[in-house]
Length: 331
Ligand code: ATP
Ligand code: ZN
Image 1: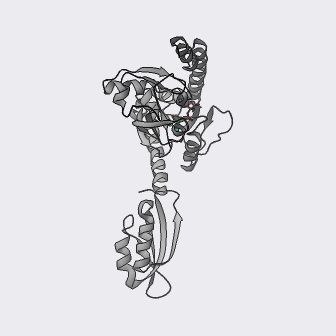
Image 2: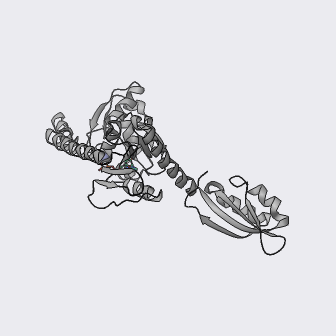
Image 3: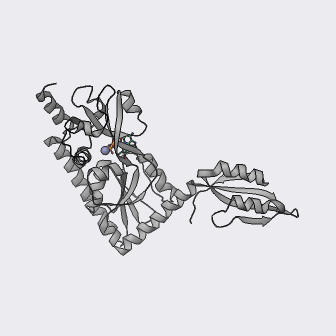
């Protein structure tokens, strides 16, 4: 492919054409002015603004987390804002790429976004908590038939990516200076079009790479959705207090998903063996049953070794084992 057609490709897909930039900045101005008017309505000190992805891979999980921590709001269709009814918080629905900027520019106090974007934009927003969804890696991948087997082999190659800054910084860190071709979508087809020798792209299962006859050779970054905060918000006592309240709820939901609540019956003689199997969060709750010599034992068991513990409990003499999920767990 000749140089000219490469230039055409870059121009058309990088999203930096004057028309695109004008459109995008008009959109951003609109958001900022809407946020500013929202700020004047919500003059209450400590009120927070949180940006979440409007439509994409993180949207469903983000919404479900916010509802799960007890926030009551409407989110439908093309809404740009929601006001949470039972917490001093308003939500802004945005493109994920804009969220790190909104947070560092103080347009919003908080954001839910992939760590990959915070890294790409070198945002000075603070990652305050990983959220356990949206897992993916930013990987370097080459065509199956490529001789390249490590990033060193691509130091002066051509690399297509939607993550030009992360790619450049990574290669600089290993003393490389590849040609970086910025593409905003369908990066995987670049090697087949002979636009690039390798790509840097997000991969969760690797299936999209496989489908395009590519193989990963190195991971630049491990990513997941994270809660990010603006430094000024963290330094402001009123907003900080509300951020901590939200964080406590998020952690309670997270802890609950890591444990099962287990109830079982056991004869008095089995209690020492059962206690040795399950230390419980502190100690198990042991309550006498109507039948003399029999007890009900209640405890929480980590998902991590749940089945092992259940087997050991049965061996130790536990019976009628009842398991239920926890909704929230405050440790
Ligand atoms: P927007 O329209 O908001 O700009 P987008 O198309 O850029 O959305 P999505 O594809 O919805 O972004 O991905 C959002 C985030 O989901 C990514 O930034 C990343 O953190 C995470 N993610 C998880 N798995 C993947 C994957 N396999 N490919 C891409 N992103 C993934
Ligand atoms: Zn995006």
